[in-house]
Image 1 (spheres, rainbow, N blue to C red):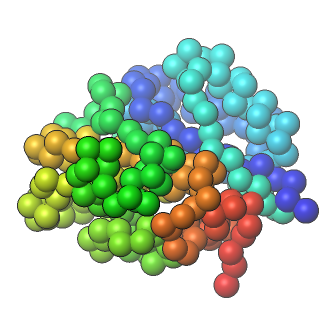
Image 2: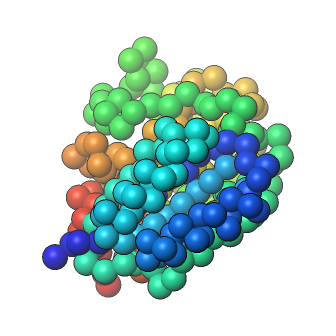
Length: 246
């Protein structure tokens, strides 16, 4: 029976007190006997937590008391066991490493398209203005190989820091198209969409909430395979609660 609630969420928000916040969040998570990983940086927070639903939701309720995190809305899935062995809270240079210091999502997000909108566009093959729509997978090769959107552009990235150069190499292919960047939960495709806008691509959107939110809010159409997740489950299918094990 799936009784363990797994959540993931992130927010780009200036956190000059990341080091102090680490101690607070670690103590809070340990007190609730949660397992997972929380990454903190001056640019924001990225977290993955698992435990009984009351404990997990209690942690988020406490997090919401900090005005900076009041609008955080985690993506949820379920499993029989916690997919993490321990609880870690780390302070990093970036919550998702891109090595492109001018990209600061907290200063302004790229436009986002909801899962329902993206599904409708993929069904039609064009956006609401009749412009051809392409999906751009911003994940690493081993994640893409687990599953992706049908016909998605895949630049065979070994790590996200390769994305900026790959984008410059392939920019011409994206001109005059509506580009929907996507990733697991939204964090990488948000940075990617901002960079695409910065180099002059006009019709760029990030998939709001990433693949996991797409699975949660649609029937998963136009996606083949599972979604790689960074825990012991390895991947989830379009129902989110089903674990795919080899």
